[in-house]
Length: 560
Image (tube, rainbow, N blue to C red):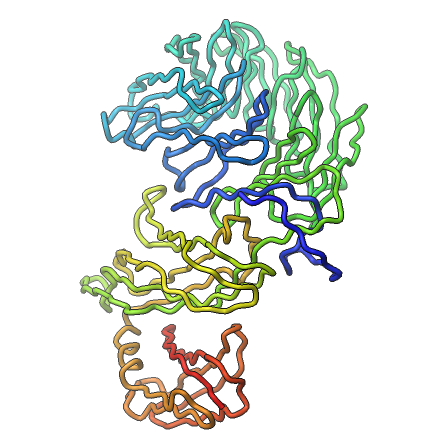
């Protein structure tokens, strides 16, 4: 987490082109970890705690619940491994001063091979007070995906399923009472009474009895995005309005959302409705007062938020940045302070000591990649007005599926990159199976420099290509193309007379340590080419020779 840091500036700031945001940001946080995360939900507890429910990985049930103070300090994490019953924590709500989590554990339960509906009761310190696993072995087609649930201190739990449309009733101790077949995907559910329930199915809301019979229904103009209870009424938020109904599902009133704004999320917070919206560069927060929307906050957009919370005088914005959950708290009253985000540019990636194992599969004409490894060499430039002392590096790996898909992640902490400095850094070795492909694209992304939010631009990701058809030629290029002298002061010679390549042309690019291209040309195979570097400034340059998706890089030093 990083607290307020600001610098004076007289330049006109355009979002996403520089890293300064004109607003009073109190703190930032990035959940920088060794795999991708996505946000299931975020909520604020009655005692001011921020609760995040994250999917850890891609889609398998390996969720975790994170607790934060209102100052953005990460206080606790609750999770269970995917081989333990109840690992799916996909739905989280707070009732009566306690967190409740509901999820389903299907074929991924490697311990018992059984399917279970899981329920957890967790206090605001992350301690489990109750855990239940309800067997769910009706038949192989009755797998469940919980989409919504409600709790009542006297009536227990009701849970609806968006897979086959079941409604599940549990008592206060999460013991199974009954399963009601609804026969249709159902998105959410609420108690209207002990034996009456309101269910949401896309844009239709229905009042049903304890046998599943429909007592009344109403269809809104668009899909229900969120819903809840306010006093004696239920509210349903769709794309263009908030609709209020009584407990018998009679329409009380509709309140239109402001059509002039692109709404991200609308929530009931402390008995008031707030709506977060955006345009191309800015965020807007409105509050509903006397059935009209009043603008209470405007600020530049750091990233595309998915959720928001309000704590005292702070607006907490939550989103996904480079595959990681990120959030920042900003004063609802904007100021002239400038918050400077880190900007670490990834200029290039070298594959050092590349080792590839190939194999032949009869259905392919060419050999395929069985495995490969190399040491990533990173050319980095710090565009921030302060030093960068740590950063995360993420890369994809082929093979696997869903949350079993592997990833490369390295946290680099023993480093200091001064403002404006460009350096070369070697990180820990990258290894992957080739997934029996003839070519691979591996993309490296810089994440969370200094543990802070990295505003996403094209300059913090770089991809390298590897193909079996180019591997042997790459080795030939490395061994048979000579570049000399080094250091050089006037004429640099590129000798390709021994390369013996089938293609006649190679593309040559010379870049400086700031990533700026200073020379390019097309070379003819078999020739000796000369480049006059006498006008180049003293320093290190990278020679890039590109052919058939394969790039060879050589480093030279110009000393005039």
